[in-house]
Amino acid sequence: MSEQILRPALAALAVTVHEGRVLLVRRRNDPDRGIWGYPGGHVESGETAAAAAVRELQEETAVTAEAVATLGGLDLIGHHADGSVKHHYYLVAVECRYCAGRPVADDDVDQAVWVPVADVLEHKIALSDHVDDLLRQVLDR
Image 1 (tube, rainbow, N blue to C red):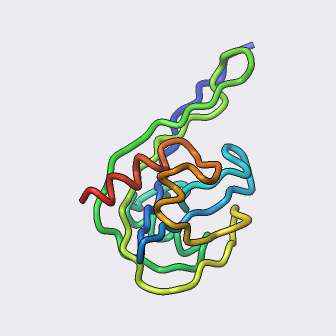
Image 2 (cartoon, rainbow, N blue to C red):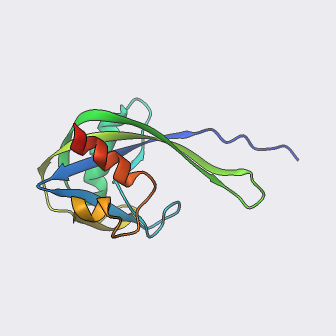
């Protein structure tokens, strides 16, 4: 049997801070089902990571924003019990400036809410990896 080669998938995250709160979503699907993180998803062919972050933010939360800056990238690699790679995403984090809208969960999230920055920094909720690190980058800018 031939081994399947899994290539990394490009995805974007929208890191949106407004009035002392950060917009987070709770994922409905794996990976990270039931855990809080930034709205985001796959970058479509011909789409920039910044455009994808803004689009995914609107699709998942009904909030509109504009991309401000790229914060950097993260590898998210999951493994099967035998050590083989289950999934590999390269996530590009994009700082977004809030424009309008109230968060309403849609698409592949079951909740979308503004969370106080302090709650994220103090890990008062279950967070995906690097949520606090990315938030600190925005706050330090």
